Length: 163
Length: 163
Length: 163
Image (cartoon, rainbow over all chains, first blue to last red; front, side, top):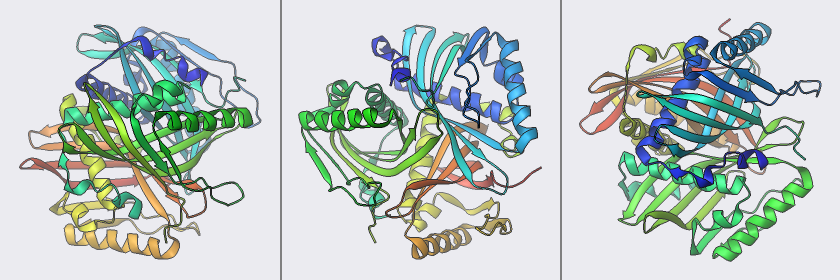
């Protein structure tokens, strides 16, 4: 509950349906780049100074990694590359990151705040698919000419005990 | 199969892409209010006389609660509040209710009929995420000035034996 | 990764938000026809000469069926009908096929290439829901007057070992 409230979308101006569809399209395209392994092109959908923060991951032994904060495209690329290659070498797993229930609010003409559910689906070869993690994301998007870029992303993992 | 057929969308006029995106946006915003715990504001996305009906839930012991029908906002708020607080106290579980595969048909200028898949994802702290329930929803939406409101909602649970 | 790359969407012109929403609507409507059991009307959302190809299914004993290629509406109907009736008789299972993270690129004025995640959710009566399969789809859509139709569909299953 608290993680969702972080979106703070309540006070923002709602966007029209055309912009809403445009932002849906942005997320689908961005995620596709990552699942295609085009990490550099994916990173170019962030601003150069973008900040990406997320909860530490829960390990299989029940311990949790520290909260991660990456600053700038180079850091973001490095983290995504390390994550992707580690997983591929280890398991051959196919990851699908679904975004849904997207809300879009306007901060100003060239700045949006979005909130969205995330669900990470993993498939191990010759084995079934599994729902691996559920998250809540909050982004600040800025318009760079005609394109939207992520200036700030925060991913909260639902499995964190916020008791 | 029978639950989906209840949508009866076949005979309705299709809506244009702009209205389609607007209704997608409506559902994302409505669901967010509920997951943020803003139950009263969520209830205001229903008409005052709205009817919300759904299958009874399947308990962990395999028994099923009776079919529920709530009439009017006050009843809808009471039911949602009781459900949310019961779950939170019991388990600290984070629930994400996904809506997808939305269809929108027009009954008349100010009345729409929608149909949609629902998937309820639950996460228990320090444990993995799980797909908890799959549903099919059918709503009648009415326009109140510029806003759309739910006048009638019916949620069919896929785990009901309709054999 | 390789299955997603098959979309080859990189070189295509992006479509505007209105067309994007229209294609989202197309997929939701098409899938609804199938889950409603309207197999013939579903098949009419393909061109007469459409080709539908997909990986063979992984059986419960770990063996995999051969890759399937259906050519033309009659074959596509026959395959879908056989699949649906076999499942219904066997188990009474309710299947929900979710499409998400849709990308749409333009090949020319009347031809689009799409890519999308798929997730198949199965529910057995009086039992919980489960994520059954994760896929990646690539379609060629052609405009037939005002309607879009699928001319080619390729579904890659994430559980195929592409090592």
